[in-house]
Amino acid sequence: MPNRSVIAVVVVAVAVLSLSGCATEGPALPPPAQRPPTETPAGSAQPAVPPAATTAPAERSPTTPPKQFRLGPATTALVAQAQRQAGSGDYGPAAATLERAERIEPDNPLVWIELGRVHLSEGNAGQADALGRKALALATGDPSAQASAWRLIADALRARGRETDAYDAERRAASLSPH
Image (cartoon, rainbow, N blue to C red; front, top):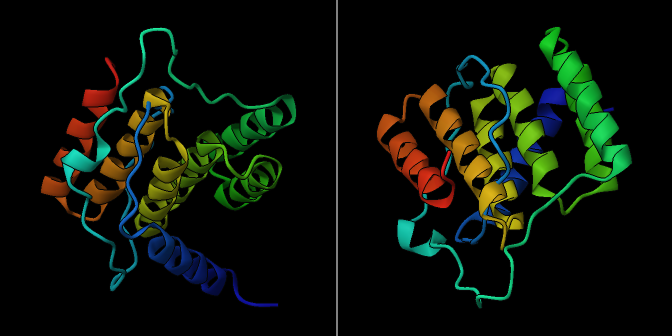
């Protein structure tokens, strides 16, 4: 069975390659509890934050409400379990629990954001950045979910010492959400 870190590197590589050049629009969910910033392994490279013009909210007709992602009952239970695990410092089991939730709702950006938060808490800012960008790509039409994805990206960039890019990501989150 492959080593967990090898799997993580492969997942990051696939996520970065699949997300390069992607931009989406829409709201994001409220930010999850702040976790302490951590460092990323040396040598990991991430794409720069995409231009702000590519993430402007989509125009909607006055009668069309914005999309809002929600978690289903099973996924909600798994996310709550993972949050308890991460709160106790059990990041590996928390990530595994969220991976189960991701298999149930693979197109729900809220699950990817939670998984990114766990990876950020365990010190893998590169993986957190990639998962935030995956969530951003899935959050089309939901400004709240997009804002949360941008906040995750900002935290991951800051943990990697990329303050200017983190500031830009925070500005994008603020432009999507009144929080």
